Image 1 (tube, rainbow, N blue to C red):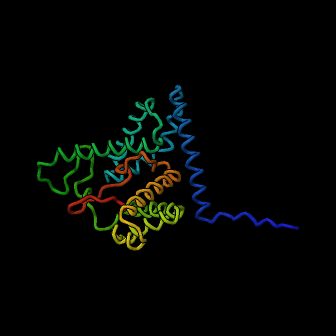
Image 2: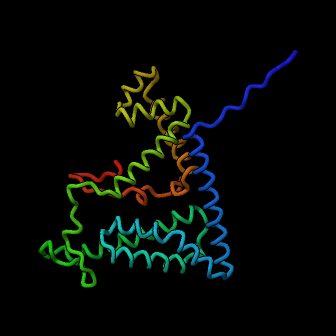
Image 3: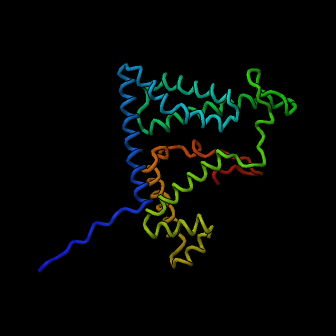
Length: 247
């Protein structure tokens, strides 16, 4: 009796794109690990390559936090000075990109709070320079009515990444996250809709979020499970509370 073999299913475009990003991210992480190893063995050129790979990205981070090119350039330079000094102690618990990002964010925050403490008791014009070394003024730090294009782009990119990873979740995990995070249903409403108790709803949401976080980390190593969310979410002023920049 003749049998026929069905052709293997082909990957959909989103699935193929996710696979390519995951492979690229893994290759990038492996290359970073090799650069760190070479530097720690005394090969200074390896650190120059690290700077080449990440300087633009770190500058974008510091520019987004400080809103001043001069300060952002200085903090970017300080980030790599600090990294050069401490790379021997880098254990690889997180990706190199995450480690550099944390250094940059901490230095940028220190710069901001240094400025804030110096000026907090003074009544100043909005045209007053924020420092003796910068032409930027206080008005540069005030949020404009128009959305920040960089923030919009980041939010859209992150939203697309989350949506693609959501599509790979098990159906019951995807369903409960959509009800909770997209439709903003309460635990009681979700329990009634799915015919389960509230305790099960909470535990299922927790497991679904953890699965989503793992998939995000597989696709983009910067979102590793040990990463601090405050490193990736820019606080936005809102009366009475702080919300993520992409909320």
